[in-house]
Image 1 (cartoon, helix red, strand yellow):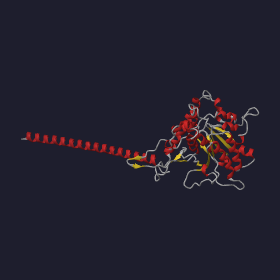
Image 2 (tube, helix red, strand yellow):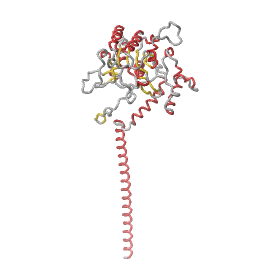
Image 3 (cartoon, helix red, strand yellow):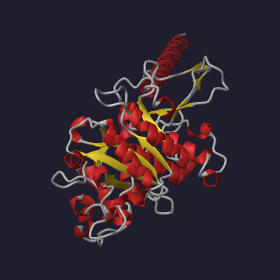
Image 4 (cartoon, helix red, strand yellow):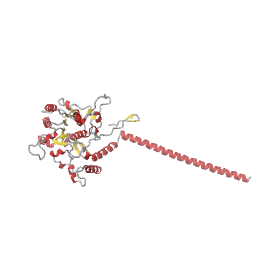
Length: 406
C-alpha cells in the first residue's frame, strides 16, 4: 500500500513538472510572438513615416531640400560639362551675337542712362547695316519721354521689314497685369521673363486648363521668339518640322566656356579668368583638364575666378560704341565690327552694373540678362528639341493629381 502511494505521488509530481514546463514554454512563445509583433508594428510605423516624408519632400518641399539638392547637382553637372558645350556642333557661336550698351557706350555717346530713343534708333540702324538674321531689343520702351518720341523707331521698323529681318521689343515678364507696349511698338512686342527660382529658363507658357486645348502656348522669352520666327522662315530647312509642344519644359541653360573666336577682334581676352588656363599645372587649356578643374573648384571652393575677375562671355559681344570701329590691330580702312553681326540673331541690351539687369550664374559669376537670352538661343541652335531641361514631375499618385505650390 505504501509503495502504491509513493508511486502515485511521484507520478503527480512528474505531471506537475511537465505542466509547469509547458506553461513556461507557452509564456516564452507568447513573449516571442508579442516581440515579433511589436517589431512588425515598428517597421510599419517606420515605413509610414518614410512615405509621409517622401510625399511632403517631393510635392511640398517646405525646407527647400529637394530644390537645394537639384540645384547642387545641376551646378556640378554644368561645371563638368561646360568645357564640352558645342564641341560637336558647327552652328554654336556662329548664329548669335550680343550688342551691349555699357558704361563705355555712355561715355562715347556723351549721355547718361536711360539713353534717348534717338541713340537706340542709331544703334539699331548700325545693326541692320550688317544684315543680321533677327534682332531683339532688351529695353522696355514703355512710354514716350519729354522731347523723345517712339516714332523715331518707325524708320527702323520699315527698314527691317523691307530687309525681311524679324525684330522684337521687350514687353516685360509674362503675367495678367503686364501692360502692352505703346501702339508704335505693340506689333513687335514679346515677353522677356527672367530665370526661375530653380535657375531654369522658361520658353513657352501653356494655356490655362480652362481654355481650349487648341490654343497655342505663348512665348515668354525672346530666345524662343527669335528661334521660332527664324525656323518658320529663313531657317526653315535647317530646323525641319518644328513643334512648339516639344519646347514646353523650361530650359536648363548650358554655358560654354570658350568665347567666340571672333571675340579677339573686339576685345582683349586677357582680363578673363579663362585666359589663365595656361597657368594650370598638367591640365592647361584642354577640355578634359578644364572639366576637372571646374568640378574640383565647385566642390571645394564654390568659385573659379581669381581676385574678382569676370568670365569671358561665350557668345560674341560687341559694345554699342564699337559698332563703327575696326577690329583690334586691324589696318586702316578695315570693315567695321558691326559687319561681324551678319547672319546672326542679335540681342541688344544693357551691361550696366547698377541697373541690376543681370543674373548670377553659378561658377561663371554675373551675366547680363541680354547675354542669358543669347545663351539660351544658342542652346536652341545647338540642341534643338533635345535641349536640357528638368524631368517632368509625377502627375498622379493613386488617382490624385499633385501640384507643388509655388
